Amino acid sequence: MRRFFIDAWNKARAGEPLEALERQIAEVVRQHPEYHDTLTDADVVEDKDFPPEAGQTNPFLHLGLHLAILEQITTDRPPGVRALYQRITAKARDTHQAEHEMMECLAFGLWEAQRAGREPDETAYIECLRRLTAGALP
Image (cartoon, rainbow, N blue to C red; front, side, top):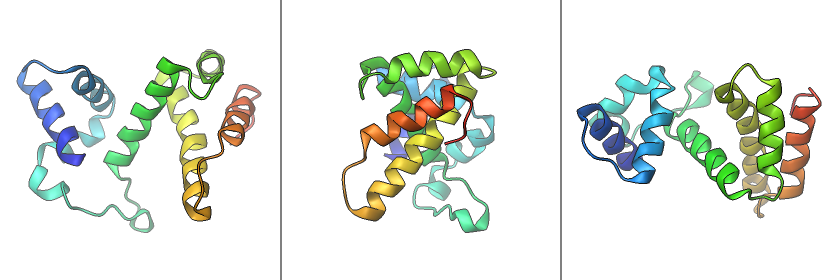
């Protein structure tokens, strides 16, 4: 998957034609200039660890969470996520900031599910997003 992100970004930079998913990836990467250099050096990052305890953010995880949020909004899955996104973006400084806020809920839900060895709890996720619309932190 990392290679797909890297290839999509390099194709976009080169002005090559992109498939739909590649266009989405390129747009999300454009919004994150802090990752541009990282994604151009495939030999370095393809197998690299990004330990949070070392203060590193995994760019592939971050970008992947953006794509997951976009997919959820497009498909309205889980049900109601699109309407909540619209409410969150109305309160946020911009749509990118709204996605970051939503990603906090998504990442926490995925972490909890992985830790417990179960499927993610969509109800808890939606409730976390509702708290965002009320101004509460996830």
